[in-house]
Amino acid sequence: MKLNAMTIAAILFMVLMLGSTIAYSFIQAINFGLGGGSSKTELPKTNIIDYELSIDQEQLVLTQGKTVIKYSYSSTCVECISLANQLELLANQQNSQISGQVLVELLLQTSANQTATMSLTSSQNSKIYPNPTMNDLVDGLCEVLINPPTDCIIRKINTT
Image (cartoon, rainbow, N blue to C red):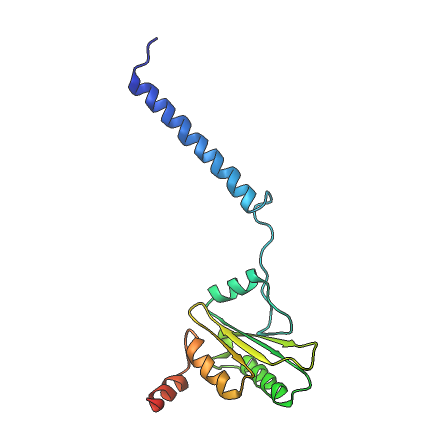
């Protein structure tokens, strides 16, 4: 039985395709674990947390269109505690244009002499403020939120 060149090329091509399919399966099993990616990323149940999100959790929050507000402050700073309370109110407000779009990380610093910092991160933009004020929070939210409230639009019109 003689096989012509066309038949040999077709068989070789089929073996190559089958081999690449099997290799792809092995690579995926290695990348996602042999258990089929059983380690699912869990998000916090509330909009306010007192710990830092993992990188996977933060990425998941950002892909959901939310903004992560990370506020690191000292308990000895009165203005800082006031801003932390404002962030809690902002995240807990019912029927607010902002509360459903943010996840707030309130991180209490262990050292009293550290500078308070606030970072706002969305999938489109990010801002970092050392020694933030309430005005910094409002400005940052207006710039970083994916769906800013109408107050931001009015504020932008008034400043131009």
